[in-house]
Length: 293
Image (cartoon, rainbow, N blue to C red):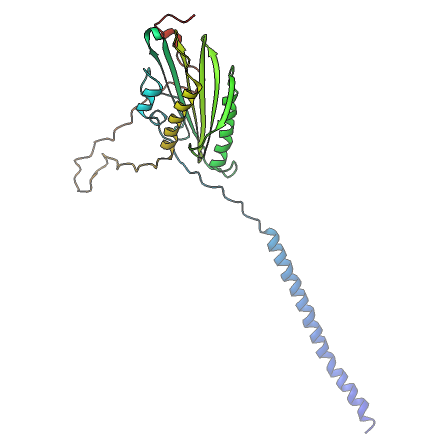
């Protein structure tokens, strides 16, 4: 009896060894798989890159005709006896992104002298670009640049700039005086932004042959009136284009009688450029009355 007890203990000890080895082996494999899983997870996290934020889409995809953006009645009021009622369109390689138009005229008042007026409007549209920013951001930068440009007009005196409400999303009026052709001119430039479009409108005038120099307030009032119409033209929803004619059945009735009637081409307002650089005709040569002393 006493001899069998130690022998039984040895048998039980040997039987327990494989169980322990199996347990250790499972534990070792589990740890290895865990490291592999952790490694692959970390690798996946490292390879994943954050996506770049997309820029805001541009609000406006086109521009109105600059020469048609200001009403005929407004042109008659601001530029009496305009040399070209429909305006002179500026040159542009892409009218959907940039356009301009100008009017000038000399109103002869006989012995009371003459009044010269010049009006110019320019529009610039900016598209959204992933690298350059949204159209609105790019337009805001140009808006600031155009204000600085107006304030830095060569030879300008009594320069003043003031923000004005009720015109687009933001607008600033820049006023100054300028002497040229031996006459005193009053200038009012309004720079306005709506969405991704910047409108720069300049209105100036002078009295000739004894005519009174226009007041700065009159120039500002006229410029604001005109620029509001331009901004409204930019913001006006585009009308759907009519179906093209001359391409088979135009009215859906199976009759091709309308074929061959081409769509009417828009009127060409002229190719001469006007970039607001002061290249308008010399009004002094047009004055009929005796120049003032």
